[in-house]
Length: 414
Image: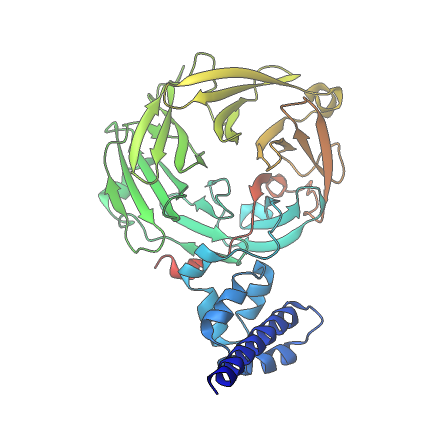
């Protein structure tokens, strides 16, 4: 008798598992209509919630975004902050490139995603109505847009953008006397927390204050120990450390700069002296990561080369100098353009793009440089906005690496 009851329980359990697998295939099938999916969701009450949660953790972001609109329980499950921590799709999303383009008079910014191997770009999100002075590189698919006294966090995967609270009232004395106001985005891989570091420097007083906002909280916190420098609008987060360059002095000639690092976990600062000859200005250079280490790329050296300054040893501040030699078809004397380095991709290749939609290469072309072999390759991008000869502000374009992320921003700040 006991054996029969045990067999019945095992059979019932196996049946539920088989039904769950069928639902997973059905929900993931694009041929199913919305009405059919809704009829399936109505019977989901008979399936344990933890089983549904487990199935959702294996689905791609695109499917999860659709399912949020089908049932309230689905939306609650997917937008739970803990869900993003355990979400591991059955088919891992391939890393992509994220393009940011501006519209007329730079009134809005448009985000497009495209495969690293090129092809047609997909529109993800449009941010109205302001144009950010600076947008961070992608941190696990999340970006921070700097609008001066305020910052906006953006997740193109979920088509969400939220503005963080003001660190201080807009009509306060600090707001009226603040210069060099910049926001940086970082991620701590140990506790999976995203943090925004805010730096504002008052050049009249010669002082700089720093504040931190942890996504998932409601208030900024002041942090101490940062240098009284004036941050430039750039940053990169590598292994839980935010790097950015700051002016040490503000003389009109021969400004002096240093590299500043901020540990996202310990919330501590460190000043790193730049090697002799390394670029100081973000207008002629940028920060990228290569093999998990910081690199400063110099755009100024000459027409056929770029210089790379690699931070080989972070603890002992040991730098190494390397070069990128252009093929003849990329030289400025032929193209009339400066090709800037925008980052690296998962293959270890360095990404090089023009800063303008109008290039000698049509359609828009991304070049990859392999530091190991010294080889270049190109991919073509279709579907970006057309070049506007009557309004040059519409032609700016930036590129960063990108990966899908289901992190719900609506519950990350208020």
